[in-house]
Amino acid sequence: MSGQFELNAEVRQDVGKGASRRLRRLADHIPAIIYGAGKDAQPLTLIRKDLEKALENEAFYTQVINIKVGGSAEKAILKDLQRHPSRDRVMHADFLRIDENVAIKVHVPLHFINEETCVGVKMEGGVIQHQVTDVEVECLPGNIPAYLEVDMLKIAIGDIVHLSDIVLPEGVVSVELALGEDHDLAVASVIAPRGAAEEEADEAAADAGGADAAADDAGDEEEGDDGED
Image 1 (cartoon, rainbow, N blue to C red):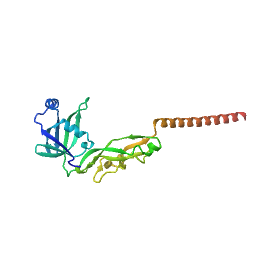
Image 2: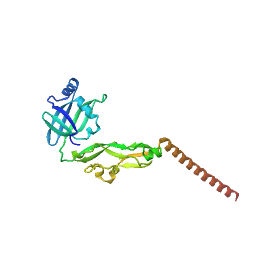
Image 3: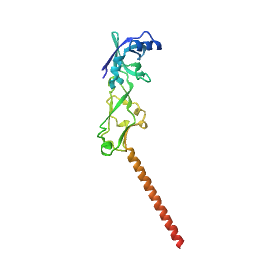
Image 4: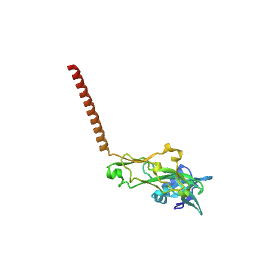
């Protein structure tokens, strides 16, 4: 997947908050920075429309990006985005240089498949709950998956899908699972619909009430028998 995305950038000489505001306002550019791999951090300028177009692709958030500056290019991954708190516009982008021979940790999105035909949904009327929407993996940059699939087809009401149930490509390991079996977190589950759960609770309460009433009646009868003796 390496090199699937490219961004053209310029070295940014004018730095600081004021310079960044002017850049965004007057030139419709976005300030950015690239760092890591034992090199100095380098402030950059990106064209807003190019970055926002790239961000429409989910894979851009995890895959290796060729950042072209002048006549050279550096391989990096998107490490962070700062957005405007109310307008959701990108304000700044951080990129981490990568070494193709050094494993890195990245968060990869989950794609839940066969949800409409899921046993717990189609046959039992349940509802799917997603506990997480991405997982952290560690691998070489060239092995980063664009996404990981979670197959919900055979999941029934009450069943839980765990991290260990996700099939990982060769060379990719789960960061959480590497910490031990007690880190096999829940990923998704199928639960009974709210109305059904409440109905079951009411039935259980009614059954318990009936059992208590029967016990009370039995006790009253015993007391009556004692009185007659």
